Image 1: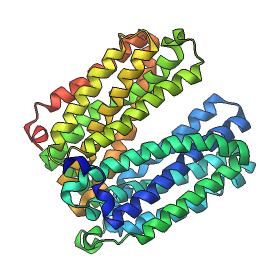
Image 2 (image 1 turned 45 degrees about the vertical axis):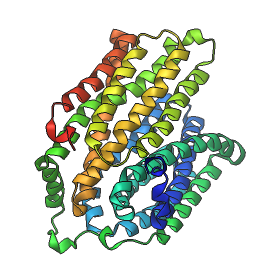
Image 3 (image 1 turned 120 degrees about the vertical axis):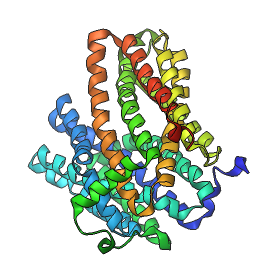
Image 4 (image 1 turned 90 degrees about the vertical axis):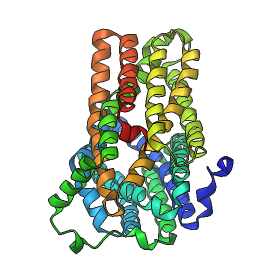
Length: 406
């Protein structure tokens, strides 16, 4: 029944083990994020260096994601995830050791961790359809998103405590331990017969040819082509909305009488609660009509975010941003589900890697462009424009029959 479908994937032992391991690992990732920020600021005192650190972690996806996806399709996905976790556990421990020789060495290690992570995420998204039934796929993706949002909240809360009590070096040890826990659960996952793609010799050994094959598959599949095309347009606005959320907290809502970090925490918390609620609602909706849900989510996200431009006070904006968080999951989860449904098992790694590359490239455009536009035209105008961009993407998608009916 629909009411119980959100939790149904946890009845599958393999998915349950993967889900538990990932929840623990994401907590560690957030602790790592806080520890890196504290370490960089303590050692350099530079906000510019903070930006460099964030850029270093995003760069590998833009450079290598396509190639990582091709290797994911060549290799056994369960083993790929296991080895990725083990490598990351060892590499993270190097951060407090190498930083003694200069902050650049810590950036090199962070770059390596982000690069190894490129293999893990597409392998996980490619494996999930092999662990649950087709009618539980949307619920499985929803559970994955809900657990990640919850784990991020726990990680943010624990991060401050751990860094304070154990210093940033102890936080990196904690993060390494969470990777080992994740690896232990992944090792217990019973990899189904369909979890491994065709042998490399069945597809040829030319890596560039395999990357091109994945891109060609997206282009030649009407649903995937429309989905990726619409999302390219929408993600610019979606990324800019992150920048706008910061500017709203720091500048627009100064009349709330609260400190800027508190205002940011309230708005970010409202969005995160919306992400959790949205994950549950999408998970209970079943795995059908993913294309229509994707487009409806974009339209709702864009329309709701545009409303924020007309709200001079923080408290009504907080409620609207909670709804924005719900709408965000209403297009993010159906998008992943649709890609899993529409992609041949042997090509999922490359298709999800292509999405990762697109997200990183257009996210940078949105993040930077949103801030630059706000300086020139003002925050309310750009907030409305951001909402209009995402809304337009959703409305355009509604004109594409293959995507609308998928």
